[in-house]
Image (cartoon, rainbow, N blue to C red; front, side):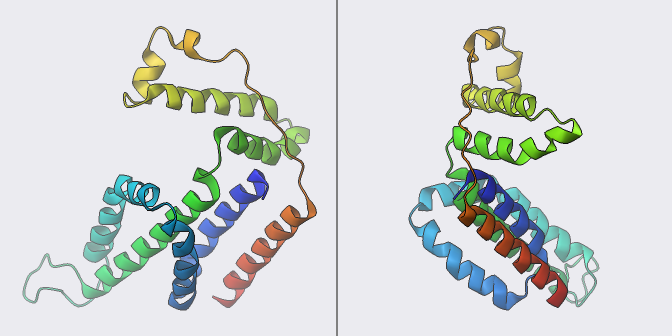
Length: 198
């Protein structure tokens, strides 16, 4: 599948997930667990890095939505309805992360760069410099790689950053095939159908 098609599928999924019913969420969970089994360490690491976001969703919904108090007689008790909504949102976030890992994070950096360039290139007629945007993205990705465990700010502040960046970034442009267009059109039609029937 073309990298640009993968990126569009991930965007469509992020737009469609909030409107999915529990039935469709269950089906999607079963579909995404199969590719996740092959890379459990990567998936667990992804969830571990976002654990505070999961906790914030759970607590935020639990204490902000009205409903029946979980602890009777306690004014600051979270509500059952809020906690249930928080769990549902955390479930949707977990599915989005699984989709992100399956569609995007498995791509090598060059393929991801080529996909973004392919999506930006049609906007060149409107004055958007797709080549410059791709170059800046490539340099940013290289800075992240060079940062290692120090963090991006330390890598960008270092004096020898210019010497560590590459002089040339190769961009391999992959042409779109009919299958790629078909997948994107089918995903877009499914998203519209879910919006109209949700």
